[in-house]
Amino acid sequence: MDNRGLLDLIINRIPDLKPREKITLGEKFDREENFCVLSKKDIEQIINRPLKSSWTINALRRQAEKDAVGGRIRGISYISYGDSRYPPLLRELFDPPALLFYRGILPNPERPVVAVVGTRRPSGQAAAQAYDIGRDLARGGMPVVSGLALGIDALAHRGNLDGGAPTVAVLGSGLDRIYPVSNRTLARRIVESGGVLLSEYPPDTKPFRWNFPARNRIISGLARGVLIVEAPKRSGALITAQFALDQGRDLLVASAGCSPLLGAGTKKLADDGALVINRGAEIFEEWGMVYPEDKGGVNGAELALSLGRSLNIVCEE
Image 1 (cartoon, rainbow, N blue to C red):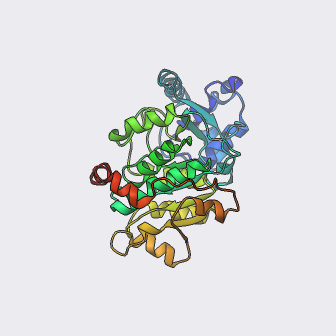
Image 2 (tube, rainbow, N blue to C red):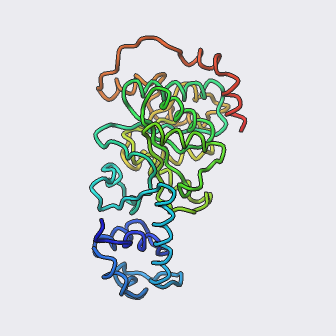
Image 3 (cartoon, helix red, strand yellow):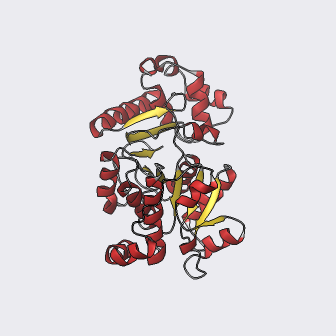
């Protein structure tokens, strides 16, 4: 990576490039100095299409240098598509991120991951089940990947952390701009507990709304299966469900989130054939994996009762 200098960061800053085009440029060149002699026209010839925005290589290099310095100050590292540490499941995607910024410890590629997503305003029952499943998965040594959003995402992360797993959060902003702000403490806990924050967006990128659908393809892409806990008829979680189907991932739904009123989107997925589960252990069974002997503990209904007040706060945010 040292021989490449700022090459990957420079390519990442070229406006209007598609992920695959960034990867193509990253594979064609292996040194910053060889790339920086190119003009915009040269790059357009390589990718075989015009680029709308105006820019110069020197300007891009200055921005890349700022990304590198800002990242070091904030404890943010990055890996390119060509790095051996790049998550192998993401390589299967049609449009994998050319660059991943991360804070924490990258997920173990030998350990399967479950994506758990859902509405930001869940019912109490679905909220409890999201936490419970996240914790159940952790008992079997399985991390959860989600989007650090309010509601289902945050509860799944918290359950996974409480169960002792290194949970994975994928952001739709730069890693120095945690969104929502109310989940900064959760983000810090994820890193401190051996998990990781990931983003394809460089430092100082704001959480623009159009970043999140693209973010969702990474959430599903990192996972062997995607669990939708509760989703209304129109929900970002359903975008993740479609990515899962397109990527050949298993699609599952949680039983508590299938009510016609609050979980119309989830219920339709179940009606269309998605596997309905009650507990995290059922995912292990579906995949032919051994789950630790059940030693009891708090089930979903008990969790809703014991943590009802805090869950309601989460659901109303």
